[in-house]
Image (tube, rainbow, N blue to C red; front, side):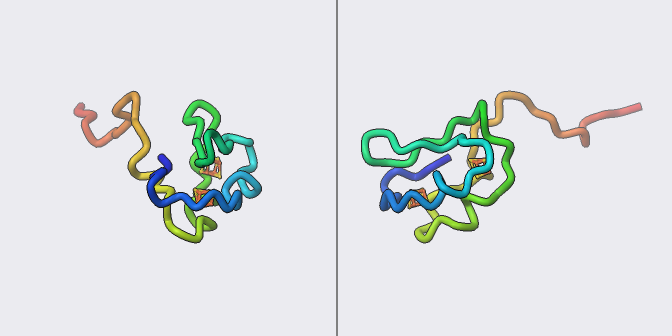
Length: 69
Ligand code: SF4
Ligand code: SF4
């Protein structure tokens, strides 16, 4: 997700995203989780670390460690 209070609207994430998941909305970067493939590029390129993929909303728990035989 994008921390809008940190975002300086530089546009780097918009330019780097391979799937066009980020747009500038109302002067702040907005990440579309439905498009995002979590490649990590935007997080790396954001100059103010406004993007934290680990904080993305996770609709399902896909952690396989809960599997038991
Ligand atoms: S992690 Fe990758 S796919 Fe997702 S928004 Fe950032 S650049 Fe785009
Ligand atoms: S790279 Fe960071 S500061 Fe620049 S527009 Fe994206 S979220 Fe905002």
